[in-house]
Length: 142
Image 1 (cartoon, helix red, strand yellow):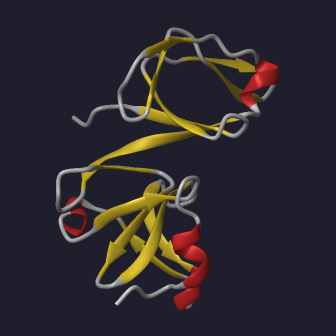
Image 2: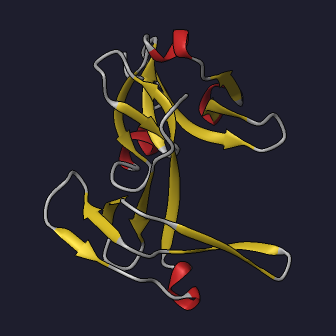
Image 3: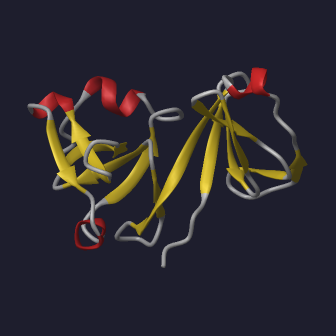
């Protein structure tokens, strides 16, 4: 069984947090996320006690851990930028296929199913919030 973990990007403060506890509830027909408990600055540092209201939720982007690690043992999350065979891809969740995929729109909308075997051949080089510049200038890093 894989660990269920999340991290979140704070769009206002431009900071990545590890989500230590998470309370989910439903409101109307949409699922809304409410933070309760602890957030850790990423990577782990001083603990911040936080409770985020519905209005504040729009300031956070929640990303789930895939349950996989890269060739160097680094955890892979949604939004990570991964290098595979010299090409950069973004990891994202495909709702229709119910799976994590790697996508690179610069080389013909390539989508690759992320599984355990593939994860051992990729390297996390950043994420789309802190390292978007990696994707702006090159689809190929060879």
